[in-house]
Figure 1: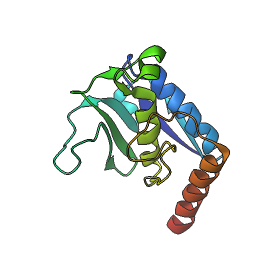
Figure 2: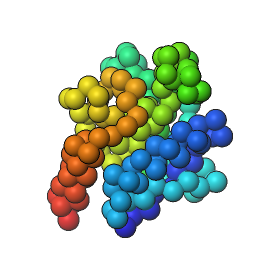
Figure 3: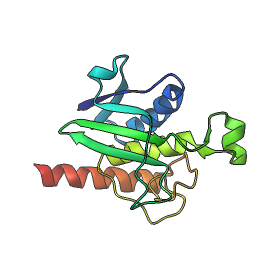
Figure 4: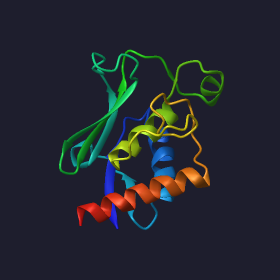
Amino acid sequence: MTTLTYHAPEKLKPFADKAAAAWNDVLSDLVELRPISSPLEACIYIGFGVIDRVKHPTRIGECRHIGPDAWNIILAEDRKWAFSWWSRLIGNGENVLACLLHEFGHVFDLPHASHPNYVMHPNMTGSTKMGSDEVALYRAFFLLNLEHEA
C-alpha cells in the first residue's frame, strides 16, 4: 500500500482530513492519505492561491502535479469559502469539503465525471457523499490505471 502525506493550513485541516478519510475508504488497501505537520515533507500541499482562469474562468480549485510524487491543491484565494456547516448548507460561499474531495480525486488521476452528483463532476455541485456506484467506479478506474503503469 502506498502512503501519501498531505499538509493543510489550520483553517483547511479539518476539511482536508474529512476528504482524505473519504478517499481512504474508497481506495482502502491501495493508498492511504495521511496528514503530516511539516509542509516541507508533504507529498500534497493544500492551500489558498491564485487560479489561472484564462482557460477555465469558473475554476475555484486546482490540483497541480508538480513532481513524480508531489502535488499542490490550490483553492482560489479570491473566492468566498463556506467553512461552517450552515454556510455550506445554504450555499454562502464555495463548499470547501466538496472542492477538496474533488481535487484529491485528481491526485489519483481520476477524470471528471459526467454524473452531476458525483464528487468528480467538473462543476463541483457541492456533493460530499459518494454512493456505492460512485465508489466502485473510482476504485475500478484507479485499479485500471495501476495495471497500465505495471
